[in-house]
Length: 126
Image (cartoon, rainbow, N blue to C red):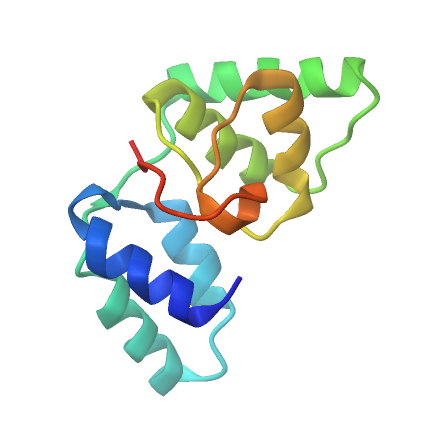
């Protein structure tokens, strides 16, 4: 996914972008050092940060994980099932670069944004 494409997306759709707290965690975990993490956090905090998990979503995510396993798919990280389920329940489209979401697209109708879906932007995020 090109950086220019992402900048256009942010410039034209920033009022429709939200960042889940678990996504914030994952992105900040990937920072090289504290200075890099601080720059990333500053950039992401321009968008609303929302909690992603509650008891209802936990139950639905577990159900979705069982559904995927019944289809022969094992999602490698629990957090990906939570993120995908959050998007499904909230009617949000997901911007990602993670193959673990593809079975959720195929079997559950998870919507994805732009180039990660083999499509060109613009697509609505929510």
